[in-house]
Amino acid sequence: MSHGQTAAALFAVFVIGISACAPRGPVVGSGADAPDVGGTIAGKVSAAPDNAPLAGRKVTAVNLASGQRVEATTAVNGGYTMKVPMGRYRMELELRDRETLAKQPPEFEIKRSDLDSSRDFVVAVK
Image 1 (cartoon, helix red, strand yellow):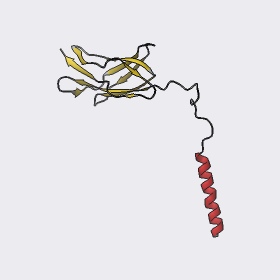
Image 2 (cartoon, rainbow, N blue to C red):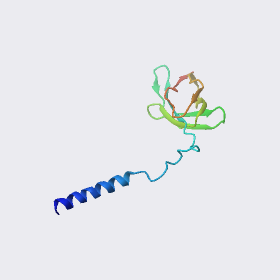
Image 3 (tube, rainbow, N blue to C red):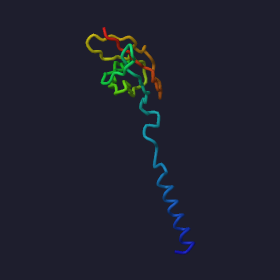
Image 4 (tube, rainbow, N blue to C red):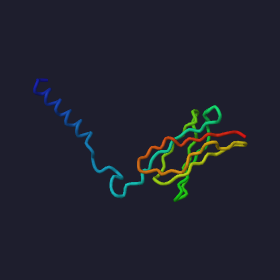
């Protein structure tokens, strides 16, 4: 292959590579009818008084306007994360026998693309 043929072949590969990366049309949901993307709620569930993480706990975000419920289960580190639509929320935690809440997040608002990572619960045993 001559130098001219090599340069032409490399140019063809470059053009094909660039065109393969070009967008083919509009991004779905980017117009006025785009869905409500909402935001993310995250936090930790721990036990008083030593702040030990509580795994396997069901945490629920309740949308105050619609009543919609979004649930998550805590991981081994006591952490949870959930995506929710925009709106005002109340957080709930499923308690077990003789447990009470020493700390519960107050009601709060989630706006578009919010990341609210401080919705922590502390559980106390009676």
